[in-house]
Length: 320
Image (cartoon, rainbow, N blue to C red; front, side, top):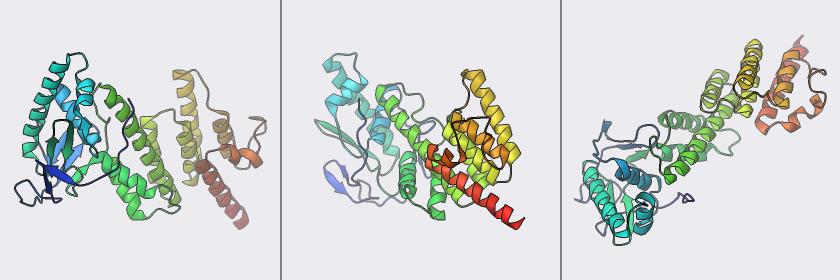
């Protein structure tokens, strides 16, 4: 099942009447803040207080689905087939109606949020109001704000780091539905992309300790992500920790050999020899790699870090 695109409107409609953002169905403006978490344990908080929703199983999965795909209505028939595939048509429809009733009841404690259900369509309302903070939406916005920028603003970088800190834990944890597996993969990739952008931005600002911390977070999520490991080797050198870079390489090599029975890529081995020599690649290591061509085989960010290392070395040699 393909995951729908997510971009779109902020309008809210409840019981057929259009509501202004921040206004409840009773016409009273709501000043509270609602936080919705799909990373880690699913939670909805009102002014920092978790709400007891009283939903479980398929109903809880349906609610999280409507949150993740909140920009468009969902067809009733599609939902019945997704969440109750093993039952007859009438039973499916009855189960969906019961789930809708439970969700509406659960959302009574959360101002702004509601469920708009017609004969054919279902849609969660209010989730794009400015007072409603969804963890993955904040991360999407922060990543989009920094993507492709040559020199990210400190404010944008800090916003990204805060969003990454908010999105801790496994997304949609505990859900085994097919839609959740697809969305979990997308959200995990988004989180990894955010950490990578943050690491590059911190390195560009010469905040090497923080960049290394972000690199460690990447390797916690994906211990064998070799492109991130290569960048961490360079960052250690730029931070004046060449010995740590070589020790890190030895540990990484041992983990690869012990867990997977493989050795690091030729590029990673060549990088290790290059950093160890402080001059150029050890000719006895990988004969097919030369200093003149080494940067052409890296991803761009490793090449940029190598160039920075060379610039720093040239500056030291000039002073000497």
